[in-house]
Image (cartoon, rainbow, N blue to C red; front, side):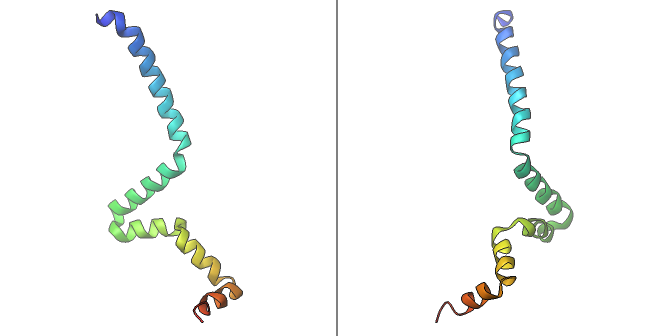
Length: 81
């Protein structure tokens, strides 16, 4: 019985291996970010995870953008009035 399905299993294995390689390339940026955070957590605990995540944090990027634009900063400060 095994001999009859062996070619199908080999074909399936080859296809899955190929798809795994494609997924590694497709999701590389996300995987790299997650691995960096995990490595930083292992070596530097929570502070390391936060330090590695901050440069890519959308809120931090927006805060830097506002701080570098004096007009946007003033509008933000006076938005409640």
